[in-house]
Image 1 (tube, helix red, strand yellow):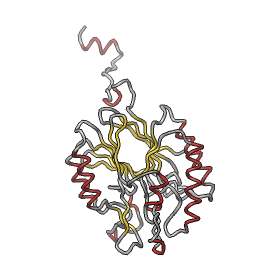
Image 2 (tube, rainbow, N blue to C red; image 1 turned 90 degrees about the vertical axis):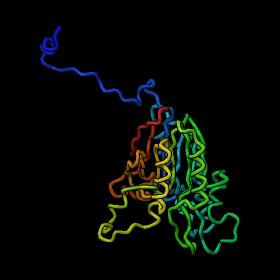
Image 3 (spheres, rainbow, N blue to C red; image 1 turned 90 degrees about the horizontal axis):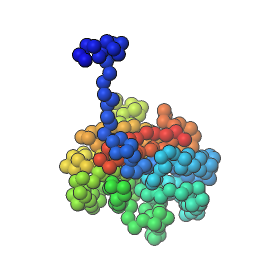
Image 4 (cartoon, rainbow, N blue to C red; image 1 turned 30 degrees about the vertical axis):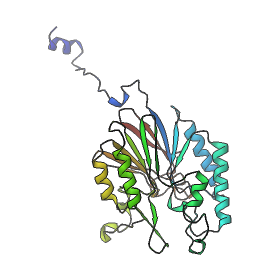
Length: 300
């Protein structure tokens, strides 16, 4: 039958083959499903414990099931310049909730609020990041592991400034050299996901008041070594996705075929509703064997 006859028999409707999405070719099944939670800022106020439990229950009801949780830091409300009793209470609350209300494996990175930098306590063994590392059973604040055919690189993006009174986002030379070696020694066919607390690259800073007039961005809001990291990632095309939090806002930036996703906070505006237009929530990321992925932000 001629093409014209086919069109006529279909009432003039031209049928075309459906587009095939490569990420769904392998039985429509991801290699891993990740829940990205960040900026929980847990304390026994603002109804925070009940709301955090609600978030954990919500993500555990996802279908398909979540295989692993990535916690992006700012786990407890605040350790900065707090007394040790308050810090103990915050971590006890967090650990009790995770033990009783969560059944999914979790990997952690540290946020700026997970660091005890009270200048009067420098002599104590748990000063700085050590307290939180002990709570999370981590030997170092940056590390890597492999799961489901993907490599996960957890970065420590929070460093104190010269006088130990504030922080900036960066890796430092020792960690950057470690990252270089991690990528160099990773099989080129193994896709890589990077997790940091402070965003490596984000557009959210451009919506802050007067930022266009002042043309300045605070070093604590985004990595100050962004250019250096991006150049490194460009040499390793298997780096696919970078997850972060810290800003309590949701955005997605794609640059040089790397997708930088800043997810909103579980706590929203520190348990007081939305942070600007971003509601409290968490990210769901489906990772596929071919290095592709799908992701969405979930308001729990």
